[in-house]
Length: 627
Ligand code: PLP
Image 1: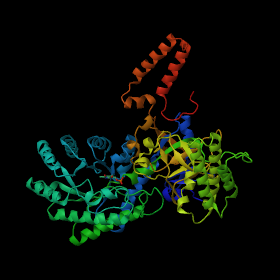
Image 2 (image 1 turned 90 degrees about the vertical axis):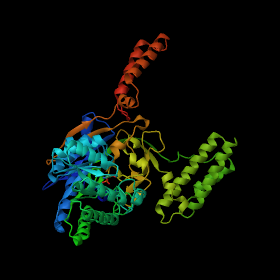
Image 3 (image 1 turned 60 degrees about the vertical axis):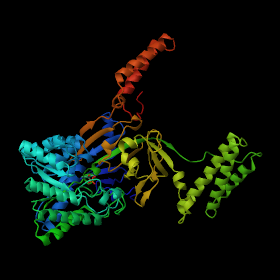
Image 4 (image 1 turned 180 degrees about the vertical axis):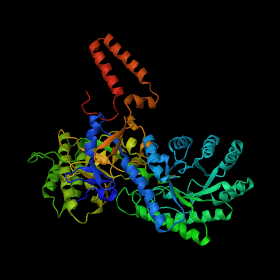
């Protein structure tokens, strides 16, 4: 059985092998290669790269770029659409050099370009994109320096287009353009009135913080006419929001964008490009639904809808079909990265073994609680649950008043736990569970402590309750016997994962295997290639994890194409303005003082300073057996 829903969210990139290992699958021309993730972890260990680590599989990134471009090509062909598709990757979604380089290199066969939202991102685009047919779309607020960079690019023959976010940008562009004698390529970003489902619902429609009002759009056209520059206006940009789960919103958005497009043509602008922004969703839950973390459409349907809607809107007006541009970010990069980590410990909510009987002088409350534990069964579990809560609370309040001892409280809590576990067992096997008891299995779930930081590696889990697929990457031929939630290494109550996608929908617990002595238990969090890496922060000073890029070859072997070591402790300290050299000196002086006071020997001082130096150079995460 596909307990973790891999076949639903995995997009055919992941599969469980017969011997219970999660494999990554790559299609070549006439065969498919599967590599167990555990083998890649072994390779990392041989290279001294311990957990946690971000693993990137280059082939998956390439496959997604192909899938997007090929799907648009199919739609264009089947509708006999009269123009081409040009994708651009928004750099902000994953700015890592290796990712952008791979997109630029592999994407050049499709003239896949880049979207830049700042000067820094434009510099990345200008240096990494070598194909003049690919586009560079410049969004965001642009100052004179940003504009100069883009104008020089245009002069060099690069297809670099400024998208006006507001009316205020136009005078700067016109002024710089005149000063340098370079005509710009211009686009306008409209504010769509379509509200979309999903997480960004409140930011879409009229309350969207980006794009121009229709009034401003009309003013832009007037000002361009006055400046005799209307011929520069070639692109209409409309971004409805990210992760749009409902295809009907997309169709509505495209319809509205087309109306703006034809309106601008009517005003005399040449146009030629229709940029529909991002929004193509990722089915993180594998539910194929219009829930926030899912999507109710497939890639082909997305492309067909766009192509067909543009035709339906523009053909009656005899408007030539524009180049279709989309800025898919998450759908391009999410699949290629995963976070891998080991588990360090488990806290279970199992009762300790109960005594054969209670002491003769046990209080009547304790006696009653004991009796409930004897009686609990399928018929009376709700009553027993209520009684157990009552008696346990009673003993806790007696304890507060000094009328029950520590050991009485310990016994009472242990008996209550035993009752709750029995009740939870009944709940799991019953069809209808009273509402007030539905949370019980979650309350009794194990807590698995993982060697990672939610804040550093999965910031959207914390910030916007993003659901990512999580599962063990081995032992999948064994039935998992534990229900668990995950806690990270930070001592923060938000440092946890307690919503999981399963084959039956989302759940607050994840089925996991019991830990074995002397054997690591590895888990993976999948589809984390978009937004997570640079949004992550240094909570508790857990730094960047190691990042490893792997390319899988046709013969089934794999190469470590990049290894980037994660932050050392000295690195993270310097990010928050400490100077590790000064800190070493401060510690040296303290140790020297302790020698003078006779507290430690010079030999111990040497040992201490060595340990301090090793810590500064070491990984910020839990390291096994480094001493
Ligand atoms: N384009 C623009 C202008 C955006 O603001 C965004 C993100 O919100 C994107 C593209 C990427 O969106 P997605 O990752 O949903 O494809």
